[in-house]
Picture 1: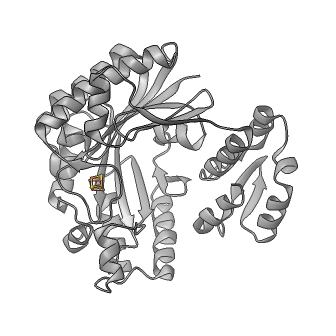
Picture 2 (picture 1 turned 180 degrees about the horizontal axis):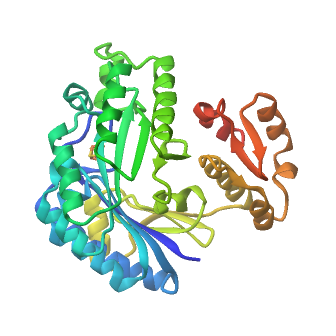
Length: 378
Ligand code: SF4
């Protein structure tokens, strides 16, 4: 079966106030060494993981901020990937873009190198909210990034949004969605803000400087985005994701369908042939290891049958279409009712899950309580 490839670019110009992803301040020399090490890792994995016969159906350059790299470096990464792997002609190739770090030349270069989708981190329309999040861009740069993407030939543009920001009002959320819709994206991700420990936002909330968004308001924002986007022709296909018909993110579907993928770069995770593994997080350590012709892998484990079953269920439940129960039985030789009889009975009686068209799905009531539902299957 075809796999996906994720490439982690661990650099940002400035750390956002809510971010706990693995990213380091951009440094041109370090970035050049990283790009070189990445090329080595791709050939190393090819030889050592026996993945050379696997076709690649999607590539995703995420981060960090991939677009802090030059257009030439981004193109070199994609070209290395093609050299090492059999990338399908119709593969989805996405580059995450921070609006403050793109220009027409860079976008043109990555389009020419084969990228066919951009995912732009918009987050909010209002400057005060962008500043609260510690984003480096403003709304004008969002509009330019979308316009320049189109001019470069990208006809598949995804925009990322955040709701539930401290101090964000319902009116601001509605305005953000109106503005974003006017940019005619093919895909929108709308995530509620998680205030992660050890972030500046967490410290501001703990000190009382910022007041977290009220839970009811956050829920109201969630119902609003679903109603607004589905009312404007988007398909709500995953808890936090919306797409024009046929423009669902093929790379992310690999994760939610518990399919296989390879990750490259510091902190990147992989899942291949029943084995999960991840790379060292420190970028210098990653570069040193690859320069010594060693693997970047730090942790690996073979998943037990129980772990694979748990993951299949809670990842599948993220999709609005739910989990295909025939496919589940075929994969694991037992029906889901035999394995999770007690849990399913409890969740159904609470109205959080339902069976429809031989699929297990979250109900409308279960959608905002998805994490509580998933915990039942772990
Ligand atoms: S741009 Fe993304 S990865 Fe970088 S600091 Fe901000 S949220 Fe984190």
